[in-house]
Image 1 (cartoon, chains in turn yellow, cyan):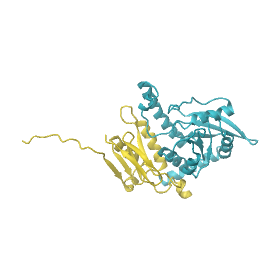
Image 2 (cartoon, each protein chain N blue to C red):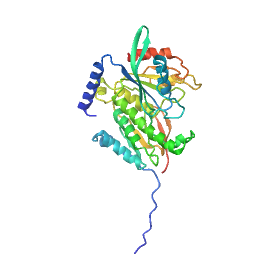
Image 3 (tube, chains in turn red, green):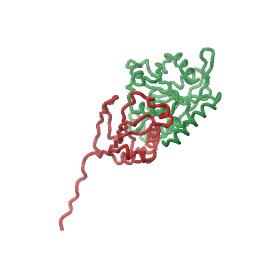
Length: 129
Length: 213
């Protein structure tokens, strides 16, 4: 019988790119759970279309409730700033839709660090676990 | 958010404001940690009621519970405006207790402070979604305003159609740049001030009366 040798755990960072279509069918809490479950595992989560302002607010709230001094100390989240905030028609804003969400990067706060950010470029540094 | 839910929430918010009558509006003071929110809240409260709202500190997350000062009557140009001031904990997406150790804090105290800080941030977000009628957004004008927390919070405030004034605080500091804040949020009125030194408070009160009266 061949000797079984333990394979070393691969070194690297897992990146989950989640399409807008995948997110569209989920409720707000399902989206937040999907994001935070990935981040808790140390992954970098990239959303094609981002979250609504209301969902961002809830993401902050749920993140805060899960911070633990023994491990998880929150998230780093980056999207491009809105150049024309308040954009979108009155009806869109009435419905809580302020145009297409922007690409959003979310990761564990202790592993991702923003180096530069402006309206057109986000540069981030990701460290290994 | 579903179409009907969004419509119902918007109508409900509009109706609440319409029928609020002469009830004082609740104005939330929001912003990142260490922007000077409590210093501003205390300045306003002391100027018009004689009392302070809460302790100020250079250590982040000194304010870990939202505090409301009711019935602050501000008199401008022969008229008066009565508001409730809600001083809220600084909003962030991360809290690391080890940062507090740099301020000569014991580990247990730092952990307790970080736990209270996380609860405070969640509380501030809840107030923003449910319980404020307008927002004063305070920024440290000596720091870069293009941060994710600022972008997200201004977006959340706009999505709820809340009236908002941006206060560019700490203009007494050498690195202060009010123009940088104006360029970042050109869609909103920006008022320069130093809450600590009391600089430009006349304009601050004029704008509060104009926006929230």
